[in-house]
Image (cartoon, rainbow over all chains, first blue to last red; front, side, top):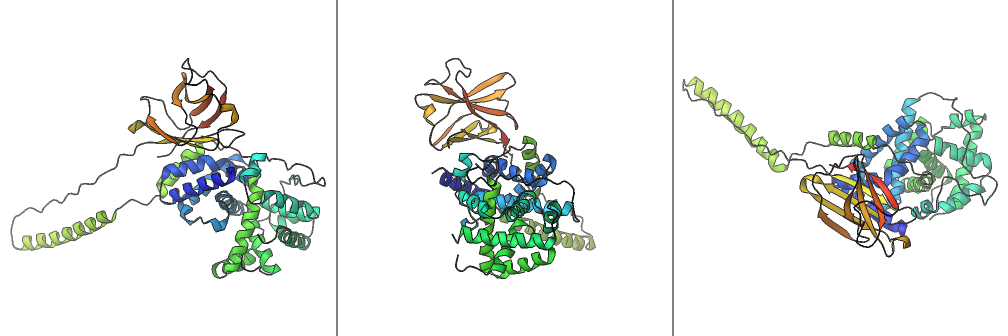
Length: 193
Length: 240
């Protein structure tokens, strides 16, 4: 199994990096940085900021590598989580107030066509992440469009409630209720596994 | 997971993972995280699900300069490696030094003219051997090689992983360092297991340079230059 091999390799590299093995850390970086960089580029918007964030988050990974446990999901999922939290911290530090400009459309392709291929995605990526991505896609498609868009705006663009409200020209209370209902439906759809 | 938290808790965890919470809600979640294992597991559940959204994005390779900067920061963040024996030796010397100064003071008072003893400690400075690493991943296949090279030790280590694709059957794959003067062969790549061999001397290895893998007839390129298609390339990173 490709995905298992990959998770095993990454677990091994994380463990070695946690013991201070710089070669293992370099290998971990070489294998995983393009994926984390894609996430950071999306949230940080510019290459320079994404590069700073990437350094920052690998510094954290280096310092915390021994804290990874399989309870946190696959090694790749854990690394992606670290990267995203770091990006959000940097984003919030940079724009403490509101930012209403820079409006971007929600471009995740979970449109009305249930057979539309998820863009930005290759079969290999699916195989590499054994965390039920296909199921997540299905569950997202089942959400009403505004609930889905609120979740995706929050995830991919790092938007807060007020930013989502500004981007969708909607009242804040409505945004909160979209998110709440959307997340609870996702929870039901994805089950307890 | 043991028990599913109620809806409020689950939404709080999900929004914590998404990053949409206002400051006071985030503080509430932080307090729960510290004390409530169920809440922690609920958060982790959501983190894993959301991570899948991030990992669906097409990977983008960062520029090599990012790794170089990271290495400097890693080096700067590293605590000074004082081994325990060293620490205790320092403590002994410190004690001895202060004892010596007391003795010296006593000696001066006693009008004796012995010179103070000069205490020296030999400090071993490890010579850092620069290493390079690159991961070569075959597209459309899980075959990959991790190549690490330490020029000071003339050491080249290659670890193969995954299954060789069908295209490789009946051929050999050869590793090349792309130099300013063109490709230089680093020998054939194994398709499984680990291989160590001597690294040719005077290679212009450097961070940011490219390694390439080409498909060759059995036994490797007959010409000393790649003759088959290039299967994959990777950028070299300095790792130590």
